[in-house]
Length: 486
Ligand code: G6P
Image 1 (cartoon, rainbow, N blue to C red):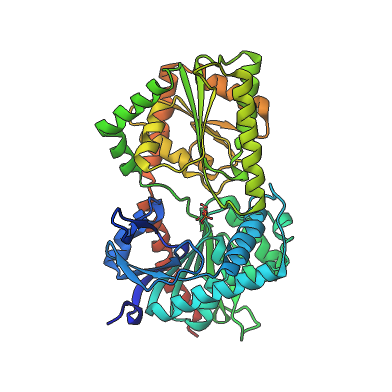
Image 2 (image 1 turned 180 degrees about the vertical axis):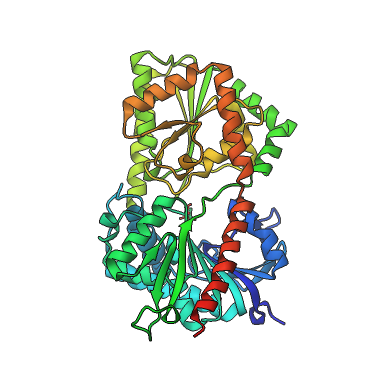
């Protein structure tokens, strides 16, 4: 039987497939599992529950048949060039992304982008509807696919549908700008459980539902009237659960890498290559305006200028991995960051030493862990971030119990990681003070904080996150069935 004709008890729907295409030395093409946390968490569930993953392979106009990879059925959805421009770069990343991140960049509202978003969401929903077995669980992910739960419920009311929003959900004052604000809420409310990173995000969502639809919300429950039942008696409504499920990482795998002799040796080598500076500061982000890279560079440059940091004994490594390079706001950001880095190195560098080591690349996980181990201070200065997994990766990798995390209170990770040095990235003076505090922190204090942080990240890993979500989803689906029975 073709993979296409099979049906699956557990279906994940995400904009991207969890694999990257690779070309072997002999020219043959294949796939490699991408090093994301989500697939690690879902792999065991996918294998034991006969799972399929529906997603875009990441390039325009690629038509690939469903295939098996590491025991998971991958179901590619293709997008043509116009859809990449309108649905992905346009509506997802130039409308929703800036709007949901508190309008740090100006969102663009274009009706043809919206039309494309609707038709691509329909394609994903149709694919899921045809692959899911009777009563299957379908788990939809992120802002690119917010209409899928509603579309899916219409076609397949037998399914249990979960949705997880990996990015923030904005306050109503911002969300209400969206010309299609009602349609998006209707799409999301097709799910049985809607997961958010923070309690505040779930609260913003519930408020939008109350303001736009007047539905009753109590705690994390939202009562959604069924179409044929204007009265809101229990049998004429379904209950949707909307609450926080803070995502995490595969903590043990970072700790394991950090214990590997070659990774430890690589960390030593990185320090040596940089001339064994007294202090290494480290930032790693997708090159995105939400990450506060400019604020971080400004604070650092001022500390060099003030003489509170000495360029001859301090290095900032900034890894900025290329992202969404055809979206104008990202191109402008890149120019601005690279100009600023050039200026700092020009003003404070000397022969053989640059105060900023800027790298516009992505790196494999081994190299990332070596960089985490090599750095004394980790800078996470996001202006708005759903969670920020880098903060958790840094903590999970510091099995030596050393290192200081500076963490923005606007990143979801700050809800849990209270023992970091918490900062408001807009307050440049506050960021400067935190950097000096981190650089001068006594080893005892560093260890005490890191021990507490590690406990959090080890206890709450991504496997626990997915298990908690799926447990809630099963519970909600049973409760929903009971309430709907007259
Ligand atoms: C964020 C989003 C993901 C997205 C990732 C990379 O983490 O929540 O949905 O996949 O950024 O962005 P990209 O546009 O390259 O998929």
